[in-house]
Length: 344
Image (cartoon, rainbow, N blue to C red; front, side, top):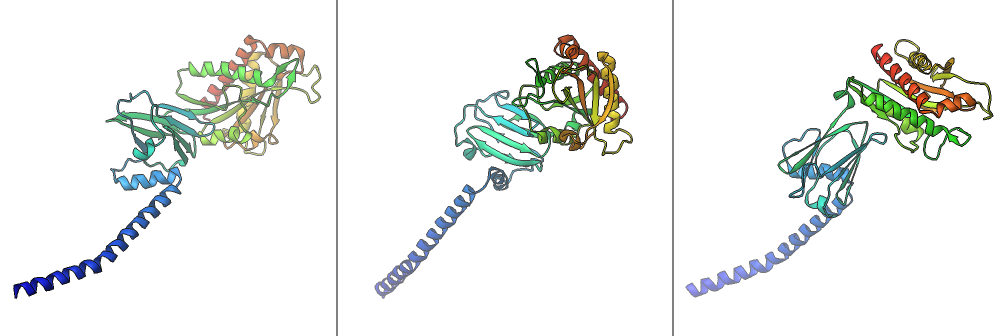
């Protein structure tokens, strides 16, 4: 009797196994297909989407508006290189001595509502922001934490300075002298004054070397940085480019915008008064400038300063001298301080 029962049980077990095996194979295949589908879906994600996905999968405590990355073991806190190209609103983080698959094994986590795009490869993270932010980096327990602060969180006032032309756009050329070089020389002397002042002013430059940002990049930087004012430095010339008696300083503004209060016109007048006083140049007045792209498209009070005429021999000689460039820089510096004191 027991032998018969065992035989029946054995037959039932065998039948159950025979019936179950196809289901096991089916669900195993289904699971593999689901996993393959998930991997394919992940492979189609952008790096920004992967940031969100990995953060959700990690289920870590809310990091707030910051990013977090586990650093390679033994990497010093100061070895990660962080750069900020605020003209392009591009923040880069370079992690040294890591392979191409590092970010797969150590995913970037966190959130920021202000990231427009993200790219990660070969130890390099490129973060495109929606405005100008100052990256603040801390390292704790082997992890790098990256916060993003608006300039207004750091500085009392913010200004943008533009050195006209640059790179392949030399501007006016007279006797082998290029306008772009004069403009940049004045701005770099202005930078020295602003770097050494005791006021809490954040200054953003469209360029500090021989490059040529686009008109759009120049014009939008004021709004992207939340600036109080925007000043562009140029050198003038008459239309036919011939040497002439025309000389002096003038400042352009957008006549299409309101002239009340801290307006572009008021900023232009301040720049004109302070620049001519510092340089001793002829005052040619403020001029309409809405036809100029960077003036017309600036969302903050903007003034374009034409320091002097390259087509006037005496003024060209002055514009190329260090002494006169320093006077021009001092005039613009005085204008910035005065404008900010007036409430800009």
